[in-house]
Image (cartoon, rainbow, N blue to C red):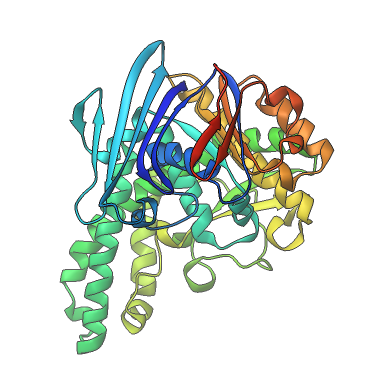
Length: 391
């Protein structure tokens, strides 16, 4: 898969932009704040329906405009597609494929990309929410149908939490709250599918990440992944702290095991849930545990090791999508990454992405990027393409 052409209208600092892309590496160069990251962010939105920098769609719309439009001509499995999304400030977003209307959440089935940015260091050093989001975006890229399952789970979770808060305020006894059982059934059905899907994904991702870590770091530090599932019990519903015992050998949960474990966990924590007015177990409380040489990466990895692990997570994701997808390679996006790496890691990263069909790179300093990735260079200044060679 690759991007042939990108058109933007009122997206971030671009009133209008037209950019052609080449096969292989594409380098976008410009000083900080000129708009180079905004270009790749727009493509990331087509793939994930979100931004890697902000949580609100409104921030993506140019100041003074009511909507932003991202339109990309794609080549996928030897056929051309026109993917479009209109991001609206005060009404639901709209999407099209080849001028035919689709639901926006269906866009990821048509375009696949893997983006790495400095913010991704939080995958190793940050809170569990970022790692859950990483897994779920990869789940949807791998199986777009799960977008609906995740959305339904979030809706049920919100409604169940509202009921718990109401019960806490009115001091309804647990045995008198029969309505909660109905929401429990939906939570278990949807949550069990999410847990099983994440476990299967981590099983496929683990070997790819270990291989990618060794290639980027130039050393094998036994990079491993494992899921931390709250329905198994543990501190505060199962969320792991850095000093918790490592259980990398624990077997993934099989689908028939998950629902009864989930129900038992909900029964166990119900008094605490009524006391706190919040759901304490489920996929929204789970985590992805990362370790190097048997130790938690979050507490023990050096700065360079953390960068290598974050890169490995994204390169491993690309390898999984490359294997599973019928549309070919995902588009690799490296946003301001090379400035953060030493020379040896820059060269090894360039080697790792060299055989992907298309790689998009942004950089403030052209010399930070290995020369073999700069064959097609676009220069950007103040939201304007100031120099664009013929691809």
